[in-house]
Image (tube, rainbow, N blue to C red):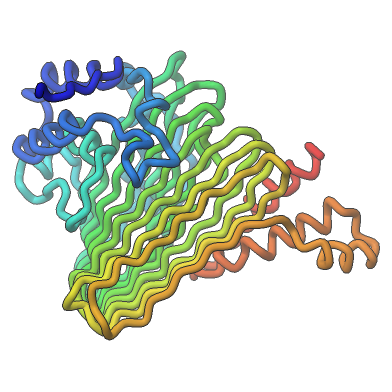
Length: 428
């Protein structure tokens, strides 16, 4: 019986042809790139037949591959700010500014060539075709190091801005590797923005190595253009006694998939992973996470909140894995969605894979409309229905935002929630 040959899509064929043409010129990590692309070539773009991509069919969405930006980012204007900032325009590293003492930044090509950085070190046992594509093709990016014991003041902002000064769709694949030394403290914001009306494609990967006793906040803000396809991945390893708080905040993009792969590498580490998603029209956003408790005495908390309007679709896929020797693990996961129209939809898929017997783990998911009794209470006190709905949605989302400890950043995100709710009231 002959083997069945899977037909390649035009996008897959183009990617295979591009890698063959470019692999000799890609900067460093040749073995890692070849292995990643071999996995991709075997599996292809993930479709709904792949369980973890059942709700977001990348193979169907990416029928063609947009070209890389061929121009220069030199003319792009930077906002005036004193904050530490690393800026990418159209996938190209544009500038590094205001880094404080104890924080260093090296271009990805240089770091890979010198061996001071490697691709895939934070992925643990996870494997993913979208990450493999980034690994195979990544040219632009940075390797950031925070020295042990350093408390980085303010926010280190990594800005990814696409489809600027571009008359046609483009692809970008930035790779950021962040190593936070033992006992250090860092607040890292990753913003994804771009022009409306251009169907550009983003495949970004941030690898985060959190040292023993270090504390990191990571805020991923998706304000991409209304035709953008955004594939964004955080891969993190947690050292002993370390703490990571990560928030996915999404209101942009036509189709978005935010992945988080978290691996516990040391005991007594703590994770808080939250999400705030606001969708309308025909937007689609998929929050997928895998939390791998590979060592004992780990704690994780996941809380995702979504407000979905119009004909938009939300997805939450969360998996907590507890390895056989990871006793005394404490993992709690919840996904809650508000459907604000009859045509809005939400798919929830929380999972537990537990191979140890001395653990405390639970998950839950809810999906429904606003409480009519609460609405009646507010409207009976003189509030118009639109304002009453906005108050309830804001309070619902704020619980997930509360994890952000930086007051100014938390207030800025809350303001974006208010803007989204105001636009909804105006549309109504």
